[in-house]
Image (tube, rainbow, N blue to C red; front, side, top):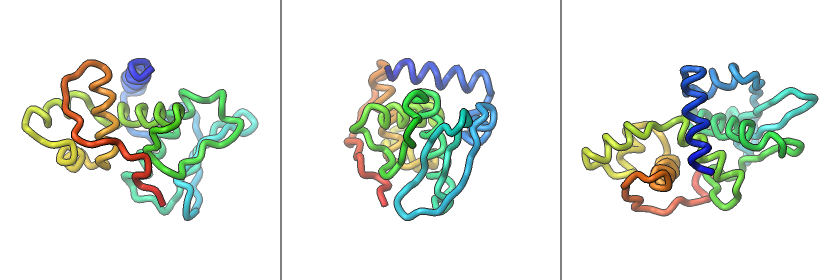
Length: 167
């Protein structure tokens, strides 16, 4: 399934010529709304045939972009389940299938295989590569794990935590 998610991400980037989640949401006809909440980061839901993604306005810019791309992943991969909202209490939750797939989608949309390989060739650790690419280390680990699953020879030095960025 991860190879299919990678292929979907590449097709979207080629078609829309962007990996910016705000532009992609606009192209896909997804309405973005903002709210303030202490525990909820974001959610996707279809209401009366209109696709909505709600984002917590208290999130920093980097996290908001990741949550938005994650929710776009739910829209593309799990639309049939959107009767109930997908709620992001814990970003990077790798225990449930739908959450893992949305995380893999976000990682593949936001991080380039080529850049990660180049950084690895220069001897960067996953944490250093994440810092250079301005993403949380957990997102980098998800991307590296996906690349390993697709046949790349990379070393994953840490386990992916499901409670990362939890409120």
